[in-house]
View 1: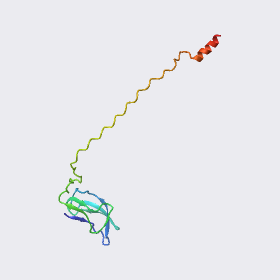
View 2: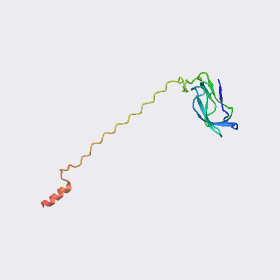
View 3: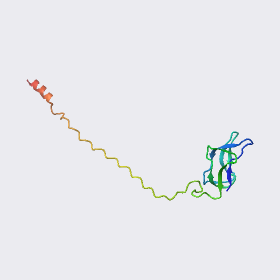
View 4: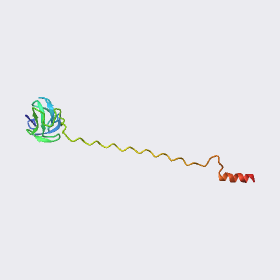
Length: 137
């Protein structure tokens, strides 16, 4: 299982920062395939894998700065246990989750109250009857 170490990208370069991993643990990698990107005070560079296999470990995360020669990752001949060959975790056998209860049905809108009967428009009001009586006099 070859270790992937921080390369020395220049004579005076003593450390580098991992800016991006192009593979995840469990991913298959080919020899010379770009594995990660590193930034130094002199240069930003994409670094290829020195061997074919599966990315078994990532020891240094994106954004971390480490010294030249530090082990960044490990490539193995087989995918790590619990990880499929595409980097996705294999599902663990868990008890089936209980289904979520269905949301309560929204209550039916209350039946509209029957309209309050207005006085019959054709029936004379008391005021109109008084006026009519005054005219008759």
